[in-house]
Length: 300
Image 1 (cartoon, one colour):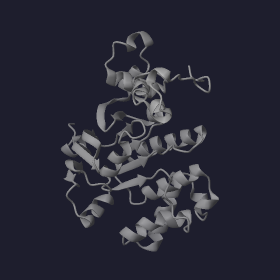
Image 2 (tube, helix red, strand yellow):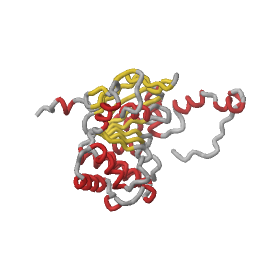
Image 3 (cartoon, helix red, strand yellow):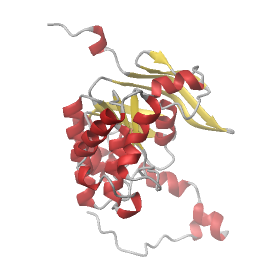
Image 4 (cartoon, helix red, strand yellow):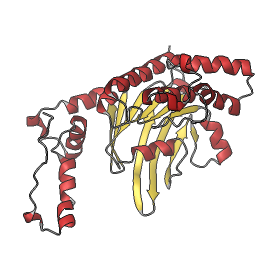
């Protein structure tokens, strides 16, 4: 049977998005679509614009140009009241978890249900327990954020993001500040929730292990430009390109390969060298500056 239009239309569509802060263009003509039920990973180095793109998609930043459609509705021109109605359809896991420290985990998860629904307390109680169980925290419901670990805070924040049964989940650096084991557990939780609940996930990250674990498709930003939006396999093949073949790649692909591999040499390093930091710092001419690493590199 052919899929219905609602199944084939993107749930998120970004077209020609431009965002400036003062005289600085942070996003420059961004185009991106996210399909129902997929996990889209948005990646890029510090200052690439990935977090700004996320904040535009959730309506926290108003762009100077372009449009952002969620569920077929352009949110860029909505007033706060109508935007809040759209926000009820998605959940957000902030980088810090953003829990209210004066509330227990139970109270944090219950808050969206109390504020945005007319459900009876008994039904809210059931919903909160279900959401905490989904992230493995039901037995910790009466603890406060100060009493739990960083990974548990992330999971509690995710339970709260799930409170209103959203169709889209936005994640802002879900693995940031976590040890490798806890980070891997968060990755598996994202995968499990996507499969169990059928939600669409948009994940902003620069953690490549996580990105390649959870992504269906990946988008690479650099200096506010969208370089490529492709399937995970495309990025894996580029990452694994041998040294001999790298010279034949264009600069954008070489840049992405360097980023994916965490390599010390490549276009990103050359760009930083060209900024003349040493000369500016010490008042030296370029030919008098000698770069001597303080530590031997540990990566191969």
